[in-house]
Image (cartoon, rainbow, N blue to C red; front, side):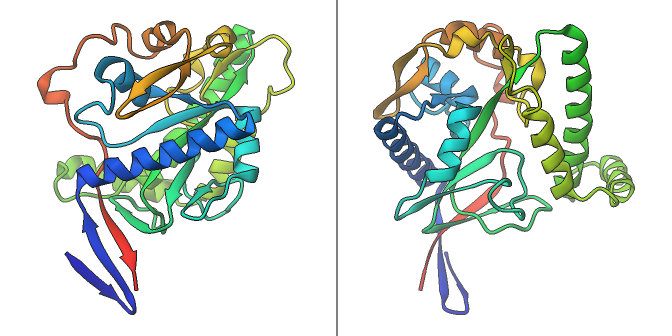
Length: 275
């Protein structure tokens, strides 16, 4: 399909081609990091897909990578190439996500979200932050972050005619109630809390700004050593203790979910853009 917007022409991209573009982004990012000594790891469903399927989970449609906070901030500061860029709220105040995205400049992604933000086909980049070993501090941090993430996610969910009207009504009430909370302020508060314990010498780790939250409680030893694992046609870095990591996130990760749950959680249309 062609769509004209002034001089801009957009050609719709199939879901399979989207995966190829995402893979190319991953390949570029991996080589960039390897050349500069920046540590990255396949994460979440991407690591699960690499171990269980040697590539994308068949019903999944995104790529996730993770970096320890020090490497994450270094990457955000320096990454730039001809066709790709990294976008993050700490670089761009209008960016409407708590984590970062590495995007293809030659494409446009239109998602089903209340966030009206111009972005290309992308892969997700999550920072891994320090969590205190104190149980009390863990619970307090978890409560604070979960509250902020509920506010943030509620503001980002679109009303949908396909959703039950009762759920839409409850969502609408929630959105009205949360109007005083500016989502940019919420994102900044989440990032501030996530880096609160960066100075600790003894700590656990977790993705605090999104995803599973501080109760991941990853032992730092999991990210100490790396191995390379197959993902599609390439080999990429993963924690050597990936079994321990995946069990923490998914339990028995070798088991496939029920058929009815083998669906994507993302709704979007993607386009090549040009003049």
